[in-house]
Image (tube, rainbow, N blue to C red; front, side, top):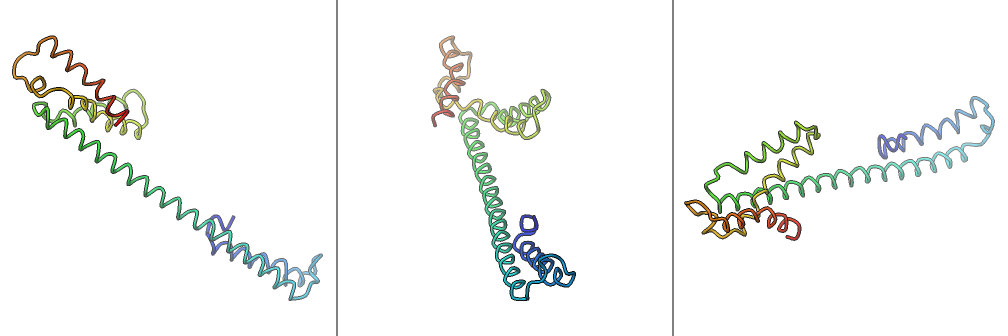
Length: 173
């Protein structure tokens, strides 16, 4: 337990303590098995120290690896969000008349997710994902997307397809 909690230092400290309890202290208190000589005490204490130090080092390395994996995962999340932001900005640049639409949708989606009971972390992820809701507009021809006047019914059908195209982009790259 000490090796788990305090690493190699805890493993060694516990091993020394147990070596003393099972060695000189047991002999001094005249406990059963305490009549061994100092050589047996030292050998036992050395074995305990070796095992305690080894176990402690293994727990230390495990903690370090876990922390390294956590930091790597956070970097991946940050890069994914940067990529999502870049994609959303690309869509916004193509369809410039929507203003700050992507940011508004992100915030609104997060607030709605919280309102219906999602935990904060999941609501945050939903908000980030919502930024990509118009990604499929990259497939919509500019003459339709940027048309100054009303759209024809055929053009509306093409606009309505942007959500399907966006899902395909996200699903298949």
